[in-house]
Image (tube, rainbow, N blue to C red; front, side, top):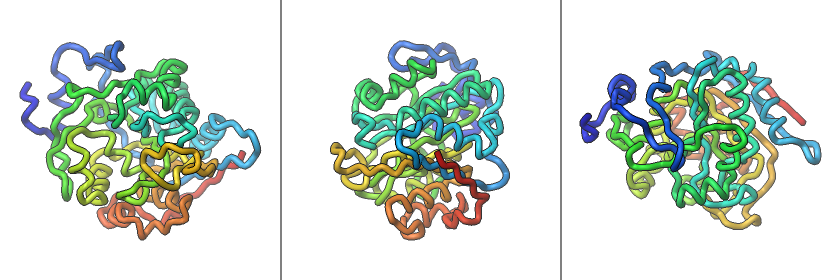
Amino acid sequence: MNFDKPITRRESLKKLLKSAGSLALAGTATWSSELVRSGRASAAPTGFMVEGRGETAGYDVKELTRKTFEAAGGMTKYISKGDVVVIKPNISWARRPEMAASTNPYVMEAVIELCQEAGAKKVRIADNTIHDARRCFALTGAGMVAKNTGADLIYPRSSLMRRMKLQGNRLDIWPVFVPLVEADKVINLPVAKHHSLSALTLGMKNWIGAVGGRRNKLHQDIHMTIVDLAQFFNPTLTLIDGIRIMTRNGPSGGSTTDVVSKNTLILSNDPVAADARAALLFGRKPERIGFIKLGQKWGLGTHDFEQLIQHKVIL
């Protein structure tokens, strides 16, 4: 196969997976291409948002995660028996969970368990990390989650990157992390935090960790880049982790003084609305955040999340 010729996402599902052999996962595990399916279900037809909040001292984060999905109709509404599901957290930095640079491991673990209970054939965790992947897996808790749940933790490597036609307004052809386009369902699971260039990093920006290439080029005209990637990946659901948020010195942080507890989860099938609601955790007006404004302009969703069906869960 000619891996220098860029292809579209649809073409990748028809052609890419004909290659023989297996791909290395997390250094030691193997992943057979036979597990990959060609279907990619769309989100529920009606826009919704669930806001889960832990207001009781010592509340259980995993239980809050479960209740948040229950309010959206349960995971079986989105994940079908036999699905291959990829969870896309933000685990790019080798930071411990209390630093809020990465997705809360208890939220991640609960989401994986819910997918498995819904009948998923395989659940995988995928992120193209910035720091050394093994250190990121160890310090963020992602390795522990994979061990506890049996989910595959995919080690990012050049052989899992494929040049694809993004057909964006700024990005046309770019290397994409293959597992994220081969999955039946993808759940975007970012942490909410400050970012020095884009003001915030939430759900739509999390897709920068789903591609390869030079990140400094992605950071040029970053708001348009974020929207281009968001329209390409189009996840089944977005769950924004606002249990602990990083309010300054993002995206890597490094001190607990940068962290504020918000004890909040935001679940939606509208990626723009999810980011808009999460912006309020920082006291920011969504319509003044570049990528949120552009996301609405280009039809990815609405920053007027009050238009969506609203549910609240409080523990």
